Image (tube, rainbow, N blue to C red):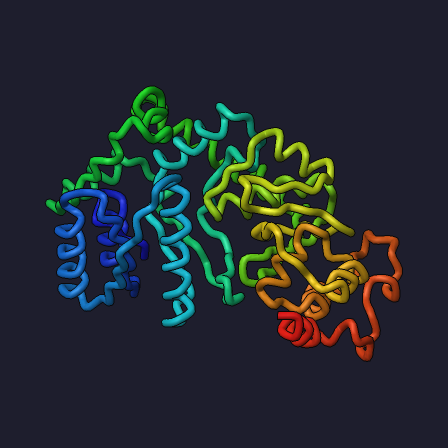
Length: 354
């Protein structure tokens, strides 16, 4: 369970105990507040009291884009624990107020039903190493006020995160100006709205087929071209990047683009590719030719090369041909004895040149 000792995660901690659910806690110390060390000590004491394991890590300092970098760091930490200790489920304490804040952030930029729905109560994800796990958010239908009443009724204390009142974060400004008042007066209606959005999202996401992860590369099979922007938005949101409306439109039109100066997004033969964008990488001609023959999009190739991901094995795992493609199999893959598929030859030739 992702734990911070704030109101939300303290409530989830107590609920898990009361329902006899086995869990451990994982905590990231960002060192941003004076009380951070006290929060860590309190979390360790709480875990020890109930016989739980406490996984705690200190985050580095970031010069800019703190929220996105912090999100990326903590999920990498959580996934490393999943791989190391064979956990099957990650629990987070996001609640209804968080979901409304997300809704408002997306609404003012322009978004469709899937983007407005935001967080899911249950989803299946993969670590960088390809291990599957469930991400559960069991408090999404509970308001912050309900969780506060729950803890106060049991005499349980928690730490207040002063950064939640910092107007420098857009989420906090929207909550202070609109979200808090809406939740106070219309919580039940907001809850029903998200129930409807969840139903609509499930129907829309049926157009997104199987997805595979190879390190930081994602490949998604699309049942229709209209699903491309939804799939890209879903994947990039996990990485802390929110697509702009113009970017979603370009992806929907099948354009090849780099978003946030970091992520390459391309479509080819019913497949959506999303990977870190690598600039200025010199690749051997044989490697480029192999990628061309295997129908690997141009902006994805440099990432494969720098990460030593074999394009031929990649195609084998995702399938050599999309059912909606009119390209013959013989034209999209080379025979096993083709020297172009001897991937280690690329690295030998690279070392020889150096």
